[in-house]
Length: 231
Image: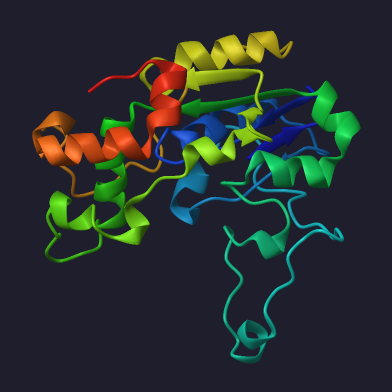
């Protein structure tokens, strides 16, 4: 996520919606006091502006690192809530950290994606290191298969952001969001954090049986209704 005090906007980063590419693009707009959370080290070279900064904080509501992890010398990862601000941070926690004044006065935006397409992207990402990938149908039985994007940009049962863009219209929607935030600079979105070992020529629809199609429809009914997606 990115919190820009310079431009008074908050970008809430969702999963498998080119969030890393968006951060790579909008980091160039940030100033020295802005919060930029880290992401996968291999993608840091593609940032167009400042690198990760100001994300480690002390706050009474910040989760504490478990003692057992310290005792065993386990590393603290960039996605762990115990570092402070982290990449896929939900709206409610950002509000807790920044306070009501900043939360209510800053322009907030996020992105989402057709859930049937997003689910295939998630499957490819989560199984990319497997020598033999499980079938999509088998993977969909795992607890890790669910993608919680909707929960990230909702707050108290309502949409938490001022602008919810679409992955399918990525660069245009990003520049629309920035323009609405008062940013006059137009940005381009680089290709960053592309999942390896995926069949780019294969349509997401080809992964689905009727039962799997219905499963995704049931899982992600809120965002499907919100954004009007269909299979």
